[in-house]
Length: 158
Image (cartoon, rainbow, N blue to C red):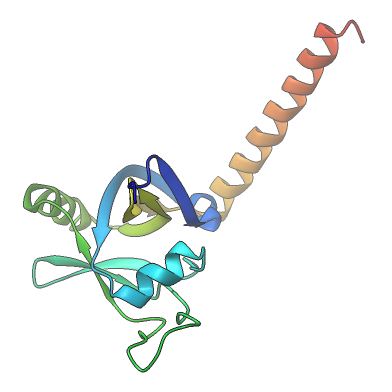
């Protein structure tokens, strides 16, 4: 059977981009059990309230929900278990150095399959204040209005 090609998104965390200013993104593998992979291939996962944290020089993903595999037996996994993130040592050291700065955290942005391997995109993020969120919404609305006017002019409308 040929290996999958490309990128198939399973779950994305849209709220993270609203609540945090993403400074940098990293692609990490995950240490998963067999039933977790099968459940992910079925498109079932949730990144709500998930976060990454350092423990003993390694990075772990907490609170990511992968529901139990429906055809699984007694070997099924815990839905919210802590999962180890697989990164190069250099990347882990660089991330840990940046995390020691105040106000920075690691948030998962997407879970996807890249060429058949389960990956998670994590973002180095700083929390936004409420006025930052309002400014982003106002800017997005203004950009949308500008695009609407430009589109009408292109069609010969006023």
